[in-house]
Image (spheres, helix red, strand yellow):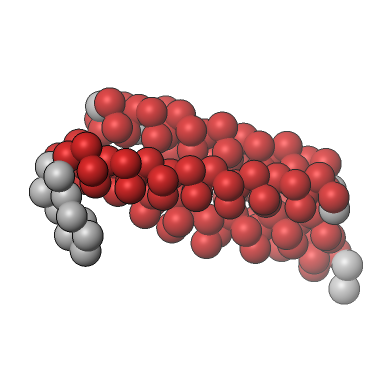
Length: 126
């Protein structure tokens, strides 16, 4: 579970980095808090952070359950897929939102796979 814990912390760090990027974009594009709309480029940064938060709500329990009841090495590997996918998502969404699927789909699939495997593994532990 140590690898799973490290990957979870890396995912949280990535989310914080996205938050810092939003803060920098606020200054660069002149969008003062508490506003979350204004410059379209700022809105892309904001959506990256918010979408990542939405995805973390599924990742965190999925990686924890699968790592505990299933295979922690595979769970950690799938978690790394999520982290890398989120970085690609951020880059593509900020530059061209139409290409965001390249970053979204692999991480989403990794989470879905961990949900299914975690459910199966937990059921098997009954």
